Image 1 (cartoon, rainbow, N blue to C red):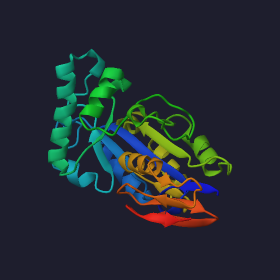
Image 2 (image 1 turned 90 degrees about the vertical axis):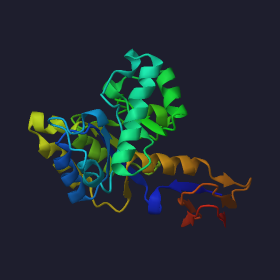
Image 3 (image 1 turned 90 degrees about the horizontal axis):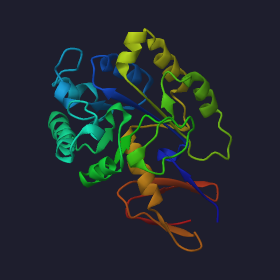
Image 4 (image 1 turned 135 degrees about the vertical axis):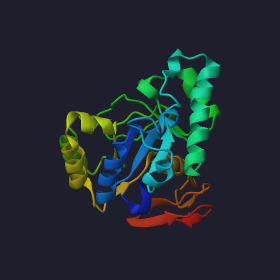
Amino acid sequence: MSIEFLYQNGTTKALTFSYDDGQIYDRRLVEIFNKFKVKGTFHINSGKVGDSNFIGKDEVKTLFQGHEVACHGVEHKYLTHLPKEMMIKEIWDDRRSLESMTGQIITGMSYAFGEYGDEIVNTLSCLGFKYSRTVNATNNFTIPSDFMRWNPTCHHNDNIMEKAKRFLNMPGYMKLPLFYIWGHSFEFERENNWEVIEQFCEEISFKEDIWYTTNIDYRNYVTAMRELVFNVDHTCVYNPTGCTIWIKSQNAVKEILPGATVSL
């Protein structure tokens, strides 16, 4: 029996953004994202919140509503330079502070300066983190095999309009493509090129086949999808997770609710 996996609500593509540091220019970027109803993840250095050119503490909860707040280290330090105790404190204190500011459980991160190693990855997992983004561009739209070493598609200055055309016109055999863009909002201000992200969002928004999602929601969905349990003949499926999953079976889209066993 033919089984096709789908994204949330039966969509076939996914788009997510990841922006670092938490500078005041996030305000304009959030405004653009909200205008086009796309979603992003904002990785904040909590120790810099309230400093010059950084958002204020009272903004963290309200500004990013509908998006995700995630960690980036308290002071944006090179994790690979730190003794283990200092490395843990840089990560753990950031999570504690951001959870206090937002009232949310935070389990996402991006590596400051793109620096990481096996010990850092293992430590993050022990501290309860579910993903962390690198700066290593894949220039493709594949699902990551390792969310703790999550490589984005590209930086926003890397010809994203050309990539948008490829993404919007993917051949049918390319299943579940993900377009993952990262950067810093201050780069738009510094380079005076806000039109780059606005034109991109206008081009790629309001498409019925695209799931516009945060980093953590994407990670949680794909992880749950991978945990579905099928019988040998693929005539029924059990969803052991807390996430609703969509699949296509015999040309019919089916919702697999949490804890449900569904005949196919």
